[in-house]
Each structure stands twice: as structure tokens, then as C-alpha cells.
Image (cartoon, rainbow, N blue to C red; front, side):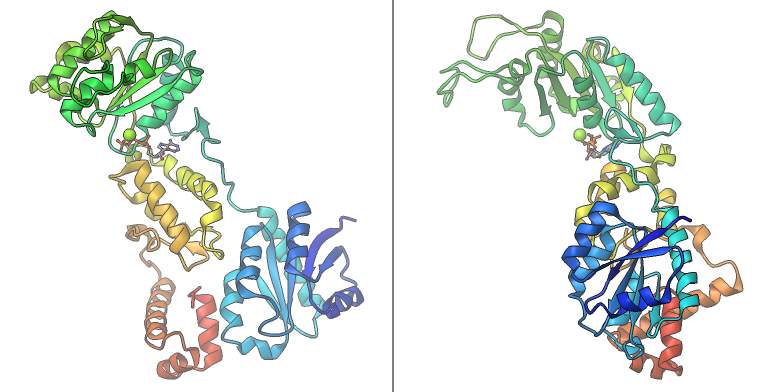
Length: 442
Ligand SMILES: Nc1ncnc2c1ncn2[C@@H]1O[C@H](COP(=O)(O)OP(=O)(O)OP(=O)(O)O)[C@@H](O)[C@H]1O
Ligand SMILES: [Mg+2]
């Protein structure tokens, strides 16, 4: 017979004895009496189910307990004395973190049923949380047709040494693509030097690119290498190339043709071995038509063109990216947060993401830190509820009205359950039941 294992957090050891007496067929519980011991055990073998015994309101330090409960993929069951069912301190904690609870003395049959259900739920596991890039390629997350196409293009681009032009809206991952090309090409061991052409004052860009000799101008107290020289044998990433002033566009074109530079104030012509990767969020073709970008430079850079799709053009990747961001920032999440609600996922998939992946990262990170829910909601992400999530049945509509009224009244009464119940004209027990059913977080 298969023996299912569980962990039992019990200060006094009474419940450990009670469990032994109940002879729960098929179950074996490993008792621990401190959070520290529990942490060690869970880290070593992570049983799917755990039981926590509360012999008083302050049985366990709440924050530490909650951090522990949230950290492992375990379904938790609470065991407590009946009088603690009314504890205003304990009940919200139980609601946030536990699958079910049992009163003492334990009822063997009910306990076996709950354990079985909790075990089944734990076996379903959390949604797989890929690490950033685990579902994708080149350290980029994505499996939509558009991203697969981009990965195929990158595969080709890394085998040759021509300039690359990466296009795409803000926050789509252009810099990440540039890094990927560098890291997977023959130049991986060489430097990757990034320069934002839009962020440097026009009068300084020339010396930033080409460097200068000592005494070239006032303040040039010693020779300085420019970014092209610094990128020798590696990659020079020119971000926002559309912002490069016209005279510098001419200098850059000359460098691309001749592969040599002369430092400002210098005379020596130095041979450089640099691959230029440029990125732009503006339509360079249009800039050419409007006379803001040199046509010859455009064709020189555009030999290999990689368009990075906007996030709304690859909605299949949204949830995947959100999970990846979640996994990458696990350590920062509010302790009770366990993942995304279905409604949040729908809201993310429906939203248009003007700030693309960068915006998604910001919203998810912020929600993980600030959410007070077990499952991040659309509101936590600052996103509107998707249309499909509006109530369609009478039951859903009723639940929605009930939730709204209870939440508003609870807020007004500063979460005082007795007072809220009185004002709503129901009993405290009924209110607790509704709070539970409607998954309202106190
Ligand atoms: N496919 C992806 N998988 C994982 N992370 C991504 C992906 N695309 C972008 N990111 C992340 O999103 C953020 C924004 O990406 P990046 O800086 O490359 O965008 P960008 O196109 O250069 O934006 P901007 O135009 O604003 O400079 C970065 O933190 C990056 O790591
Ligand atoms: Mg960028």
C-alpha cells in the first residue's frame, strides 16, 4: 500500500499522539515542534500535505508562519480548539492559508476525507512556473508564432557578422534581442557596449563614439577611448539610432564602410573589428522619407532587420511571461500570495499593453508586493475586469452584489465583523460563512 506522507506542526505533541491513536490508514505524519524544524523538513522532502495545530491565538508567530505556509507547495489543514473559531485574529489567517480546518477532538472519517482531497489538490500542483526564458529561446520567454519567427531569425543572424537593425515599440525586448545576438554569436567573448543615442547631448556624441586625444579640446586632460574602440572585437549596441544627429549619421556610415576610426584631435586611423547592432522604436523608413535619417545609412544598417512584435500581437505569451516574472520575483511577493486569479489572467490577456513587456513586469511586480489577496486580482494589477468576467447567471450576479455590499460595509466598520453583521442584519456566523464563500479578504 502506498503511504502518503505529511508534516505535522504541533507544539505540545498532543495531536501527534491523537493522530497515532486514530490510525489513519495510508498516512504517515512527521511531527515537528518549531517553524525552523518545519522549514528544514519541507526543504528536504516537501510532503504534499501539512497539518498545523493551533493551541491558542498566539500558537505561532503569524508573520513567520505565513511566510512558511506560502513558501512550499503544500496543502495545509488547521487543527484548533472550537473556541478559536471566533478569533478575529486567527480566522483571516486561516482563510488565507488553509485548505480546511478541524476542531478537536478529531473526527477520523472527516479527517481522512479532507486529507484525501488536500492530497489530490496538492498533486495537481501549482501552475508550472517556468524560469525566465525556460519557455522560449535565447533567454527570452515566448512560444507564440510571432516569437518563434523571431527566434528563427535570431538563429540566422548569429551565424553572420553583418549589422542588424532591431525594430519594435518601447519595452518589447529590443535590448534583450541585442544581448542574445551577442551572447550566441562568435563575438560572445568580446565586449558588449551599449549606447543610447537619444540620451547623450548632440555635441558629445561624436567623442562618445570615436574617443579623443589628450588636449583635443578644453577639459580633454587625457586620451579617452570612444565606444567603438571599447567594443573592439565585440558588439556596439546603438539604441534609439533614430535620434542620431544627421552629421553623426555620416560619421557612422563612414565607419561602417571603412571599419576605421580617428579619435577626436588625433591623426592616426585605427582599424576596428566591431559588429553594430542598432535599435529603434520609430519607423526609420518614414524618418528617411521625411529627411531625418540618411537613406544610405538606413540601407547599410537594415541588411538584417528584426522586428520585435508588440505584446498585444502575441497574446499567447502574456500569461507565460506573467508566470515567468512571478517566478523571477518570488522572493519579493507578499507572503500570502500564491499566484494569479483566473480573472487576473483574463484581464492581462485582454489588455493592450502599450508599454509591452516592461509594463507587464512592472504591473506584476507591484501586484506581487502590494496584493492582499491569495490570488492576484485584476484590480491588484490595475487592470479593468475583462468583459467576459461580468456576471451572466443570477447566482453570479447575486454573489457580485453580496460581495460588493459586504466589502463596502466591512471597510466602513474597519473590518469589525460583529458590527458589520449587525448592520447587514445577519448573524456573525452567517457573515463569516459568506466571507468564506465569496473569498473576501479581511
Ligand atoms: N520575451 C521576453 N522574455 C523575458 N523578458 C523580456 C522579454 N522581452 C522583454 N523582456 C524584459 O522586458 C524589459 C524590457 O525589455 P528591453 O529593455 O529589451 O525593451 P526595449 O525594447 O529595449 O525597450 P525600450 O524601447 O523602452 O528601450 C526587460 O527587463 C527585458 O528583460
Ligand atoms: Mg531599450
